[in-house]
Image 1 (cartoon, rainbow, N blue to C red):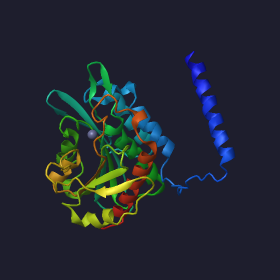
Image 2 (image 1 turned 135 degrees about the vertical axis):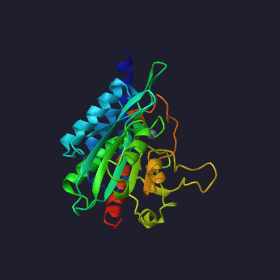
Image 3 (image 1 turned 120 degrees about the horizontal axis):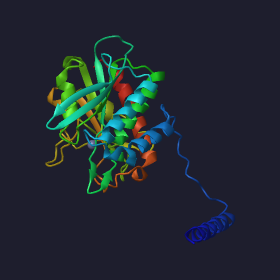
Length: 309
Ligand SMILES: [Zn+2]
């Protein structure tokens, strides 16, 4: 019954479209320049869809779902030929009653020095509350899947700087994974020259992707200011605390780097209606915006990588 009804509606709408086209020969379609993504856009969407599926039970730190997510990330790193650090992808740590694990991978830079750029996103989210799964598609399966897009990109375009791909744990519980990474010195703090943190990059009603951090690290400002926007994404400097109550400097994992005086740029979108709700699902992301946002961040990375940081 339901299906028949749907077909009827479809038939109606198709005939409507064909009528309109016949009577209106000068229909114009908007031609947008096609974007050559420097990563596999289908894989990007597959990865965010997978990590934000119910199977991962909201990826709360210390749960079975988080373990599954960790394993998925490790397998992606292996497949994409991202190297472990000192023999392991896993950096375990504990806080309160939680056993947590960062997942870290290394891409060797062509300049063969000790400088590292850390690309980060957090894989933990809110878990299950009152029987509802908080899948955290935008927050932050979007950032983690972007790490894999970066790995694909680096396989063909090796960076000058060494790059750490960091999927942090415990972000939702106080940026714990990022603080552990920065203070554990698995990579010496003095050898980390930049952190680019991605947390919520897959949807924006205004098509705005914010870049936060140039207020404190003005050497990074010209790159962002002069950036030529890609596709649907408007890259905007903002939320740096210049207006009261509007400061994202400490809102995600980049705060740990900032507190250690390591320059950072945080990429993220404005809060939306599904933020920290069980409806932050794959179906609610903006696929076009997301792909363009990842291309934007890869391009920004490239420009920073070419500088003497
Ligand atoms: Zn987040």
